[in-house]
Amino acid sequence: MKRYPLVLAPLAGWSDAPFRRLCREYGADMVYTEMVSADGAIREQKKTLALAEFDASERPIVIQVFGAEPETIAGAVEIIARKRPDAIDINFGCPSRKITKRGGGSALLRDINLLQKIALAAVRATDIPISAKLRSGWDTDSINLVETSMRLQDAGVQMLAVHPRTQTQQFKGLSDWSLIKRVKATVNIPVIGNGDVRTAHDARRMFLETGCDAVMIGRSACGNPWIFRHVSTFLATGEEPSPPSFAERVEVCLRHLALNVAAYGDRRGVQMMKKQIALYLRGFPCAGAIRQKIFAMDRHADVADVLSEYLHARQ
Ligand SMILES: Cc1cc2nc3c(=O)[nH]c(=O)nc-3n(C[C@H](O)[C@H](O)[C@H](O)COP(=O)(O)O)c2cc1C
Image 1 (cartoon, protein in one colour):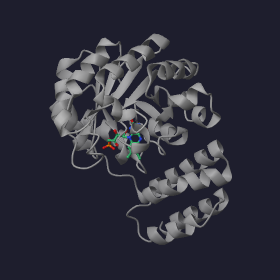
Image 2 (cartoon, protein in one colour):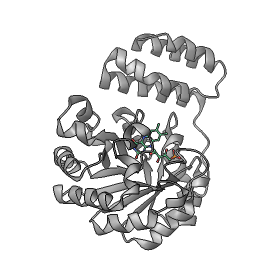
Image 3 (cartoon, rainbow, N blue to C red):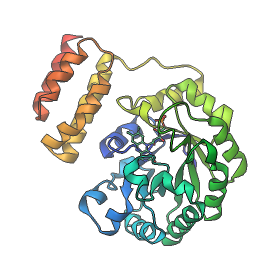
């Protein structure tokens, strides 16, 4: 696969089409969709397949799928492949109980043979490159990232994204970047490093310490799509650009809101945008009061008015 240095992570509930588009505009070289259920996809459930819709402006795009059986994954991959994404990713990392109790996500790290069969079934189901996203293992006593990476490469997977925390760690502690380095030293396919990159300096350190081909950013991109441009400028010039001004933040927030309303309609678009707005406004004076006002609203025009007033009052 071609290499793309800065990647937006799959983030259920966050990395939807409007947000992916903004991240691409602000310098992400590649984006992942939220995880899509293979069970839902093979039943062609509308809600599930909606998560896999994308606009051409988001390319290169990876659609991520999760599931627990080779046949289901193969069927889902065939259906998703009709959308012609740049790659289809299999989720071997989700730690959530809702997913693992049905054998999906990071539960598969406990059964490497099944994990490999799933990857093989996906590879055989399509001509589109298959990638995989992994955690380091189930718990600290069963870290098997290097072995799973090799098994996936053997199955024909063409790219790996590695988040070196265990399932039991969830999001606690820090990810162990030395494991990314070990994977990179073991496989020949591109390795995307992931975990705890919050600043341009973190991104540079991850490239230097691990030798990874790309850096994936998740939580720190939320309410902050500028992070990608910031990192790429820093990597290219060694200079850190100044953070976005208050006006820029609010203007991009307004644009994100408009993209959301165009994608989901007025009410739902506003509803889904509220948590994003809270992050765009984080740290600004009176942000709490503005947030409260907006949280009680359900029309695009009203929210846009409040944000615009806030913007002009502070200029
Ligand atoms: C709210 C949220 C949703 C996530 N959804 C997914 C997902 O759908 N698929 C996946 O592989 N990882 C998912 N992750 C994990 C992230 O992709 C990423 O691996 C993790 O957040 C570590 O990267 P970060 O430190 O840059 O956030 C999610 C994480 C969060 C916080």
